[in-house]
Image (cartoon, rainbow, N blue to C red):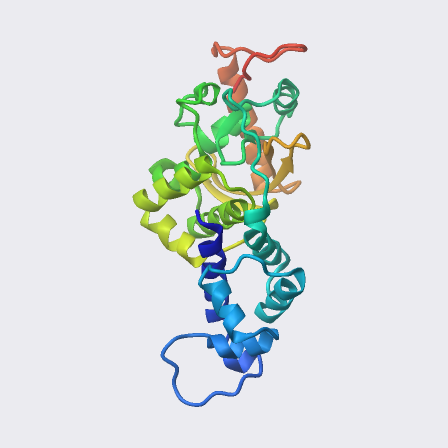
Length: 302
């Protein structure tokens, strides 16, 4: 992904979303294209038309903080969108992260943490949405149709973004699938602006080719840091669920995250999570999955 062209696309899409009447720009007649014209927006932002045109065309990469702040204000960007604008504009100055040569894996301490979360479905993800580990509840809630051992190997490891757009079972799981899809793409867009990552580019390219829904949403360039909120599920065993999710980032710079689900106290969804615990517990005695013990570095039980 070319950061200069991504910056131009982002600016064009956000400019097209501005209506002249909303920003005090006088206009007459019908417009052939939506939004503000370049010259109108450049005047609104207080930058020269020539300079702004070069930014949209991806041929300028040295925008100052003052210019970027002016663009963000004129576009009425959210906090996440403003951060994304700066990320795209600063991409050429980024120092490439050193990539680990060994396969990505969750830390033993993180594995013990998710296994200790009794009654809380939890999943360990890397920055690209690959499942590095899950506890038994997390597996049964999100992907009971998949092998519980699949996160152990990079070759079989599920990716939540791929499942969301390419797996029929996962699509049926989300009763408000369009909302979930938009949220996933917005998170990926934010990540793409921060990190020139070949694996991420490969994921986006593959999903764009295989899913028309993903390609359409990606072209809209949504941006949002989705670290908490509500998910609506239609679980094959539990029925309708309304669950709160929280995402905790690892402080070690690995990009790993722990995704956790809880229910409103006293709600029907809380009772459903208790039932899920019972279902998982009844299966545990027959499972041959190893349990992560103190001091162990073995993969987690699912």
